[in-house]
Length: 425
Image 1 (cartoon, rainbow, N blue to C red):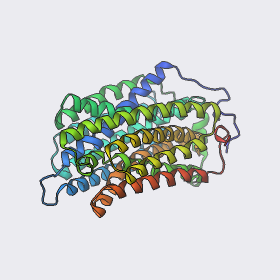
Image 2 (cartoon, rainbow, N blue to C red):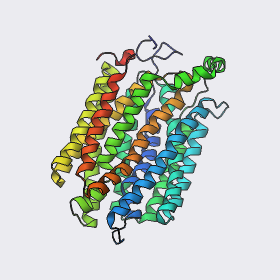
Image 3 (cartoon, rainbow, N blue to C red):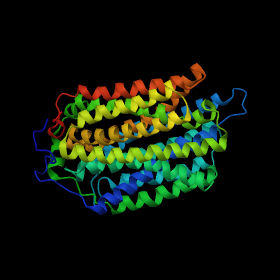
Image 4 (tube, helix red, strand yellow):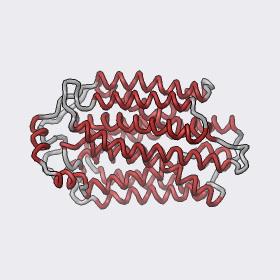
């Protein structure tokens, strides 16, 4: 591993800082990306595929939702590292990351329009794959900007990504519920937001060309060297741990609407209002934890300890719901989930930028790392649907979510060659 001081890159020994304009545009991009990914997952797709009157009952709707979301997750996990790798190799006056950010945004917005008019699991599933691919491509491009342009503010930028995820759920679900938008209107609103915010951020954020030294290093590397960098042991442990922690989080949050409807026997109108309140509580704590932990990790290090501790807090929250299912308990757990998940996502992303195996392939590796979170969020409902179908209730869903969260965080302890910014553990 590199022995450079914290806050520097191989290209420079001076800390690189971004201003308020950069962070505003970066936040806008991620707010749009998370809003259009998580609002359908939490609200629109479950409503679209809900089957309360089917012969198989409501469980068939849960299973259909899980399958659709899992298909999108699989498509995204393939698209993100491929798009990242191609953006690493893109050259031209328009930039390396910008063409991919714009292309992903346009594809995602078009697919959101299509899903609004889709019917049945197959139609919804095909359109959702388009949304997932588009957001994965754009996310890989925007994530690469952290490694490209920042050094000492990587924790702060990672906090933006994490907190925008939580705020995006509130923005999307809140607007649709409070304005009483239907399915079509909701999807069209999401498509418009992504198109406006994503295009503005992609065009206005700086996108400097790749350094000549980077291009020379790339051309001189053999295929074996590139594959070796791709399979870096420490980065892989963090990658797989992030996937498992996100599956644990999705088990605790992804089927909340069904849990309120059929686990706590809320009527439909009450369940939507309760869901919004839970999301608001969750969001407040995600944002606060992401910002505080990101700044602590920038200033003091301790990234591995913070990552593991955050995952444990998330796991305890899910286990609390499994042991004492009630709306009051769920409200407390929502706050704890927010603390754990916000801190984990912020610090683990900052740690990933420290552990990048190859600066020449930063977008590819960060694209894969970023999509591990999205894949976990989309696989969670599929796994959760199976767990609910297995026992006919929700306790096993939350119990498994708690165990996976703790196990995924513990995987971070397997990292051996810790970067200096994370060594003070």
